[in-house]
Image (tube, rainbow, N blue to C red; front, side, top):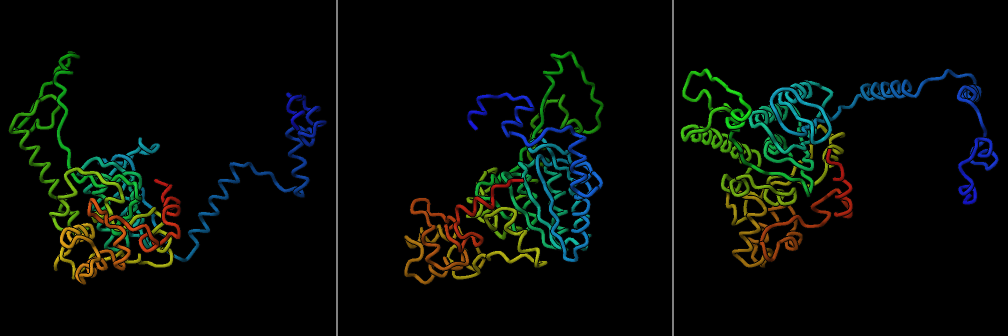
Length: 383
């Protein structure tokens, strides 16, 4: 074979002699041989076959009696109006389009649950709020689960808190609970280009967002008031959805960005895993399995009102020196905080930082015999 490589390139006849090809034939001769071999069956073009096959497969799926799971992608920048299709990073999710799709998923009887895949760094606050509202309305009729991709921050996380449970990948960039407001002042650029604008306005703040008028102190204060109002509403939604105290949310908000694993320890997400983690079991059940509850009693960090596992663990460490000490109160809090036995929590307390990390065990991941390897297998896809 190596000698044949050294002889090339070959003429067609020489290739037959070297047994690199079986025989020589024109395209029509090859087609005639295939027809003869198939007992004179009709010839179908590859594109036509693929089209017919895809239609038949869709028909088979629609004929199945069991319910289906609706999959909705919210990717790219979140904006008002219609979505803009395109490759990842160049696309945009429009609130009008997403609302229409959610309305269809909500009203279809054959859709038993909805899985929302969010891979968005955020965008328009108004558009994010409109999508959040549609997700809340959909949850009133059927389960809605959100899976966070490589990034679900700011408006992306705003959208996510409208669903339950919230599942993030360990390296998901999430959080960024905050608001950015302002405007571009292009007056200098227009002057250099010789462009003059004449504004006709009625009202003191009619030109508030004009790119031709600079901001005065009163206008800056107005924009700050609007941003603060939207930020407070963002925090309130997270407090209500995540069952956290306002103080706990503010401590992780103000634009701070977290990985999925860090967000899990701070109560911003429910579980770690990929989009398959919840879509598989829900095929056989209209309801998704319940998530682990926060402790209701026995935890000095929350008393009767409650707190996240990280807060509980930190308070215990500060008060007793080590978690899972002989104190029954400590053991009870550890067990209740994550729904697991006290020993599994002990190994996950950082001796320096004093915060809770997900224990690397089957009990936490639940869908992995080998946590790291299998977890990576589940989370390789970010679409």
